Structure formats: C-alpha cells, structure tokens
Length: 300
Image (cartoon, rainbow, N blue to C red; front, top):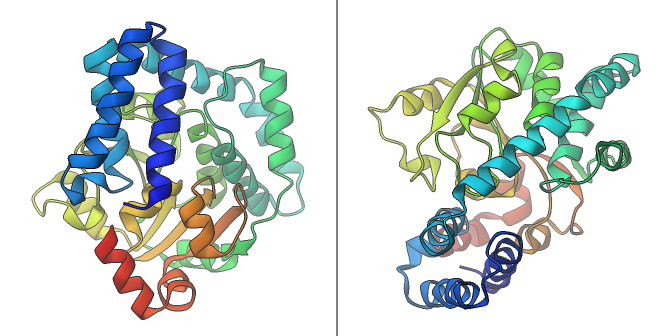
C-alpha cells in the first residue's frame, strides 16, 4: 500500500462518518479501527481495491449505515437520469457524437456522489465534459471496439453509470456486457443501480463478486469469469478498477477515469482530476516500463 492510500482511506472514513454517523464515540471507534487495520492487516488486504470493501463492512458494523449509503446511490442515479435526455441531445448535435459521449462519461467519473440541485449537477457535467483527455487513446479504443466480437464495460460509481449508458449507445456494439458490483460497496454502482439506469437496453448486465480485488483472481468456474475470458476488449471505468486491471497483459484493455488518485496521477505524470483514456499496453510498456511495472505489481 502506498502512503497516499492511508491518507485517502482516512479522509473517506471521516467524510462518511460526518455524513452518516454523528455520534462522536462511534466516529472515533471507526477511525481507530481503520488505522488499526491499515497497520496490522496482511499486505494483500491493504491494496487499493480491497480498502473500500473493508471500510464498507466497518461502517456497517459500527454505524449500521448501509441503507443510508444505498439511498444516496439511488438519489445520485435519479439525478443523472433527470439529465439523460439533455445530455443525449447534446451528444446527438455534436460533430463527433461518439467522442462527445466519451467526454460525458469521463465527466461523470469526475463528479463524486453529487447530492445537490440538478441544475448544479448539469453545470458540473457540462463544464467537465469540455475537458479533453490528457492521455487520449480514444481512437484506438473506438477501432478495437469496432473489431471486437465481445466487449466488456466495467462500471464504477452510481450516477455516472447513466453517462456510461450514453457512451454504450454510441458504441452500438451487438455483444456488450456491463459489469458492476453484485452488492453495494460504498458508492460503487450495483446490478440494481445498472437496471435502474436502463443499462439493459444497451448491454447485458453482469455482477462482479463482492470479494474480488483483482480480475486476475477470477474463478475459472464463475459466470463472470467466463465472460471476462470471452471479452476481446475491456473498458475499465474509474481509478479503483484501474488497480484491479493494471496488470492485465493479454486483453485489449482501456482505462477511462478522472485521476482523483494521487498515486495514479504521479505514475501517469498528469494532474489530479485530469481525464484519461489510456490503452493498457501503453501504461505497461511506455509509462511504467518493465522494471517499474514489476515492482508496482509486487507492491500491489
């Protein structure tokens, strides 16, 4: 685990405590539990993808807030859905609708759990959608998707799954899967969220097992494992899924995210919150380099 991960998980813990667990005694217990875990857990449990699962379990045990977090995900989905037609119209009027849809899905990843007024969300989305990716392999992405027999899109957070749907509409692939968590982990989208957003109209929805922290650990007998192996192209959304897929060398993998994670921003030599559309092999071969890549895999 990188030192920045400690800061990030403590910050997330504090924000969730302030929002859902106003009792000071229980808040202190949660914070102490998080610190103890990071100090004592086995190294494989302290990787970036494992931390949300731990934190979700901890907050439920100490504060019983899983329903409150679920309600927030639903509210976030509904707010994005209120803007769906507005965004779709903007995409359709664009000179390059496919590129425009990609910019909106990146904008969706930039926005974290929006709970304010819909007009505020609209302004934030439109503003973020003006940003061009600082690493831009979108041309290669579109080309690979056109040639692929099967596409697997791995979603990230609630709310932004609506913008993912609009990108899938533009990609218009005949055999596309959309994968999200089977069960809720903090603000990560679930199968129910995907259905709520209407993803089934553009892709077949599949659930990712709750305990999964790396796609290289997928069971060969699982339904999702079979789909993963079948996919010719994988579109990975969000920083958390980047960590689960960064060592994928056999698949045509593309990473779409806003670089909220300072570790990733440093690795890619970009700024915090920069949008990125990155070909997986570019990351492995050109950005990290073989020696650094092997060290990173060992650390994670």
